[in-house]
Image (cartoon, rainbow over all chains, first blue to last red; front, side, top):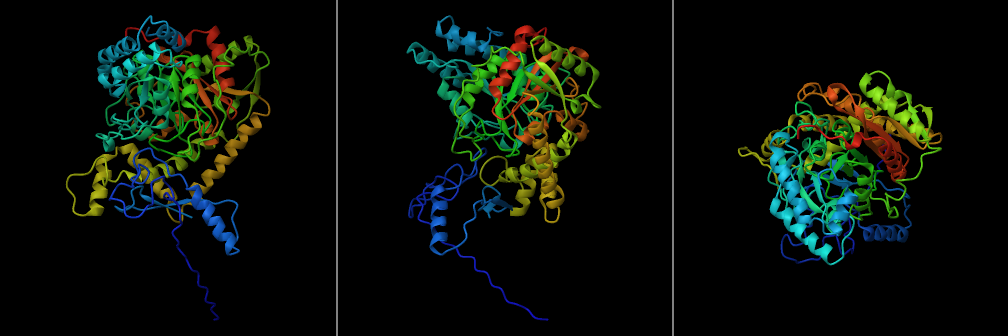
Amino acid sequence: MQWETVIGLETHAQLSTMSKMFSGASTAFGAAPNTQASAVDVALPGVLPVVNKGAIERAIRFALAIGANINRRSVFARKNYFYPDLPRGYQISQ
Amino acid sequence: MLNTPLKELSAALAQKKISSAELTKLFLDRISRLNAALNAFITVDAEKSLAQARAADERIAKGAAQPLTGIPVAHKDIFVTKGWRTTCGSKMLENFVSPYDAHVIERFNASGAVVLGKTNMDEFAMGSSSETSFYGPVKNPWNPEFVPGGSSGGSAAALAARMAPAATGTDTGGSIRQPAALSGLSGLKPTYGLVSRYGMVAFASSLDQGGPMAKSAEDLALLLNVMAGFDARDSTSIEHPAENYARDLDQPLSGLRIGVPKEHFGEGLSADVGKSVEEALKEFEKLGAKRISIGLPNSSLSVPAYYVIAPAEASSNLSRFDGVRYGYRASGYRDLADMYRKTRAEGFGAEVRRRILIGTYVLSHGYYDAYYLKAQKIRRLIAQDFAEAFKQCDVIVGPTSPTVAFRIGAKAADPVQMYLNDIYTIPANLAGLPGMSIPCGFGANSLPVGLHIVGNYFAEARMLNVAHRYQGVTDWHRREPAGI
């Protein structure tokens, strides 16, 4: 049997946004603990994640720079599990 | 004052015939007299309400009043309210005091309205009878042996017993309209996206919608004027231009095309409800409306599709209640997993646990396509049914609920019977359409019957017009429970 090796790379980069991916809380480095956690970050009842427009713009710019395909429609999905560092009980992923 | 329409209350406040503090006190006194028997409110804080009322009086004195300035409004305990305990009817949030206001609360506060208290509800809005509340069942003021409907049953009972002149509710499958029907009130679930969900404890995000509950369509219009509006903190909030929902109330109904879905008059509809609805349709014909028979062929699939989609979304939304950061935490546990298990087993009631289990199951690997995906396809078919229907008619009218209110405990042991209460209301949620219920008579045990009106997207002003004209020639909405 012939096998073909296909390797995919998942690359992470921190974007230069002022606020977090799904909340308006600051991403500035070096602040005192818990001063940059918003109601959305700690998943209080009733809060909703809202995608950071600046992050989407930067992602599109990056995609244009490397000649990648840009999807006209992007869907976020939830990956549910329980863990103390996951206040909402789900990761928002694609 | 207890039966006065909001417009007249507003005028009385403006003319200084009564102060907001006096008006608020009047309703607070009524709450202290009646709430023990009816259990409509979970939390009342007279000091906080009166402080807000005094601030409203100052605003009125300065000539800066808006239509609802000084009017007390009871809020379903699902809208988080800064400085107030917000329980969502659950033991899980028994001691949760919100550090922020829901968008709906912000808007009422900005309008100068007074928070009169937080109303009882089915736990996390899961129920059609207000019996699943950790704080005990709500009683129907028309007969306290019967349920007021749910999940916004506390708001309904507060209004029916004239403990509040106005209230808010939320509607995921009928939770505003069904209690409005069973308690003889008017209630409106707006188009999905019209009222922000920010600060509304999430049950099923793609279906949840806040809306007003009141004694008349005219009052609903004034409340919706405050509640509706774009909010960037809810990604499904729609940038719809601001409307005055009272603008068309008096428009004549001549030429109005009323679609009557045959599927909502078949098996399961009790004769007393059918008779009242039929009489209401005749009343509309007298007002100049034309009756058109329509079909909503996929209607029968709405309850099964809903009970896949709503629990699926709930199972994810309720995972934040884990005992780590706020709310209830079990007292004795071995390790982290044990803490999660015990906290959630002890903190949630039976109906909430049932729906979390169903939801987790239908989303689990290997079942997603068979259940969730299929339910979403059915949802599309139901929305298409409505789109077809609205080519022939302007509004769709039928019964809100198959029966009048049932006895407390009568359906508690049979979830499917309980779920079938919402068979006529669920399709509007699945399609995202606005729906409302108004009183149209009395049925078995002299209990109120509700008339269901569904409109096209953003047709709230038209629906309120239809309801208001009907209320101009009938007095069902003015009736109140005897002996209270």
